[in-house]
Amino acid sequence: MYILYHYPLCPFSRLVRIILLEKQIPYKLIEKKPWVRDYELASLNPAFELPVLIADDRPISSAYAICEYLETLNEEISFLSSNNLDNAEIRRIFSWFTSKFYSEVTKLIFDEKIIAHFVEKHSPRANYIRAARANLKYHLDYIEFLLKTRKWLAGNIISFADLAAATQISTLDYLGELDWDKHEHAKEWYSIIKSRPSFRSILTDRIRGFTPPAHYQNLDF
Image 1 (cartoon, rainbow, N blue to C red):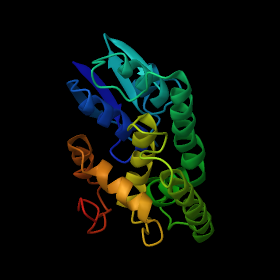
Image 2 (image 1 turned 90 degrees about the horizontal axis):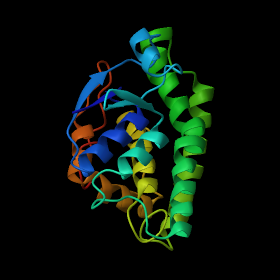
Image 3 (image 1 turned 90 degrees about the vertical axis):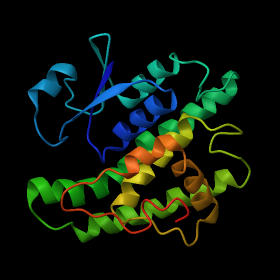
């Protein structure tokens, strides 16, 4: 059985969990706090970063590497295309959300709410939160732009791009940062994704001291 080292609100951990469920691959979860210099985690990934997947007693780290590995398993269920140009677009959008979106939005919110609460023991800094929220609006506008001409973010099939984006958004949604009023296409897209059986498992995650908004588990918002 595969072992996944994760943190419940880590969007990259959530992404890997969903892909494992989608591909019907059994796995065991071991929770790690990303702010702790955990030497078990360091022995698996010297970067001290989550997630880490143990496959055949070998650690695989980084969400991108894990996703590419899992794509080779259970090939009947795929989140890439048979067309290389389509795959280039899938990987571009995947990178947008796991790199640009994460650094400009999710990491700022996570650090100011979760890290500040559990580690630094101070209230979120208003200027950081304002900057992340302004960036979030820009990214939601980009999702709207993509979905006006596509069924899914990277084309006509649900792909790694959609799952990467949705898991970033799910972390922010848990922390009460989503306002869907001006983003109807994005709202409908996210509603479809979070209705998938694989997604429902992460919607039951709870972090001590943080209660998600009432709509968080509501599949119809």
